[in-house]
Length: 116
Image 1 (cartoon, rainbow, N blue to C red):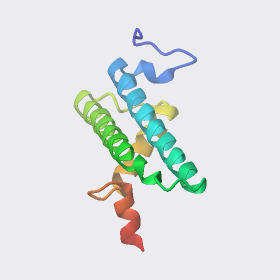
Image 2 (image 1 turned 135 degrees about the vertical axis):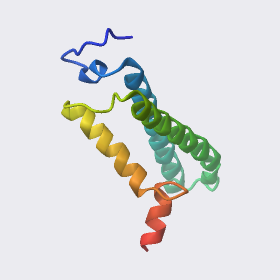
Image 3 (image 1 turned 90 degrees about the vertical axis):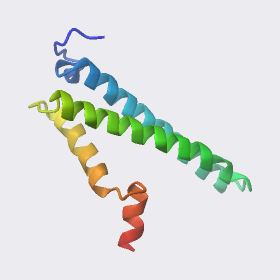
């Protein structure tokens, strides 16, 4: 991957190549989950009576997202590459912390149910 030096296009690489790879895996998993949610809502809006066929796909995609998130977090904790003065990296770290803090044992949806 990278040489471990920052570039104008990708300051995150400066911290750690593995961290960058894990962050990309996490963002790809989040993107995939979002696409599946969009597809399910579109099916529902279009009157597709089998819109629930997305449920298992959403479950698998959410599991993939969770695994990617915790792999990233574990690497940062073990490797110590999370500390950075780079504001872009700090924003990602804050986002992941917020997701973790808002999540109950069943993910972020559990926290929303408890608030009602």
